[in-house]
Amino acid sequence: MTGKPYETASISEIADPKGWSPIRKHFGVESFGINAWTVDNADEGIIPEHDEVPSGHEELYIVIAGHATFTVDGEELDGPLGTALLVRDPAAKRAAQAREAGTTVLAVGAKPGEAYQPRSWEMNAEIPAMFDRGEHEKAKKLLTEALPKYEDKAGMLYNIACAEALLGETDEALGHLREALEKQPHYAESAREDPDFEPIRSDPRFAELVGA
Image (cartoon, rainbow, N blue to C red; front, side, top):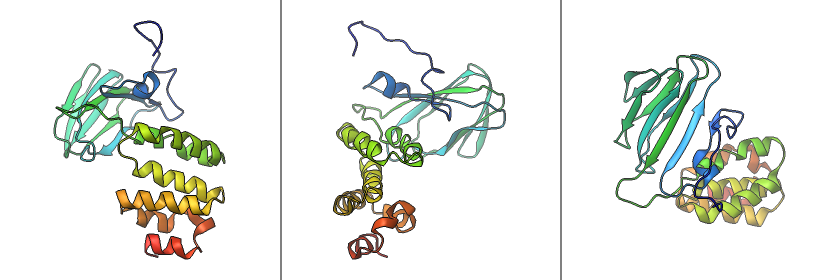
């Protein structure tokens, strides 16, 4: 929070190399989720297919540049500039494709009737690039410091465990992996094949955890 009653930023200036502008995280918005996605090319996916069952959010999508095509539960919807699309049902599968280069879609979401809780995907989205650069210690520190801010912690705990395994911190990695699996048992399948766990794969405790 700054000393002023407002803050400003350019969507393009806060965009990452993949075109995601993490607006909520940038400003620290606490009452709703808000992000933007931009693609450089026509016929490029801009919103990947997903549902909001884990969050219970209803989502509003607005085309603020270019032209998109939305798909909601198999129904295709044209989305020229200025289109606003509300998807109320969290279980509805939704996705968007750009029809013009430079298309930007703004997405706003929250769960009706409840105080907003940030979703940890926005933090986990930063981690693969950090791992690719070998920044495992930095990734662990970022995730550990952010952990209290998020309600859905399983993915973050899993990534912390990955970082610790690569750093040679076996006991810590196994502890955080155990916590992740207690919250989301399906991560065991990922862990069995994840190369990040190669340094601890021979540990019998790892095999016991993931059912290998």
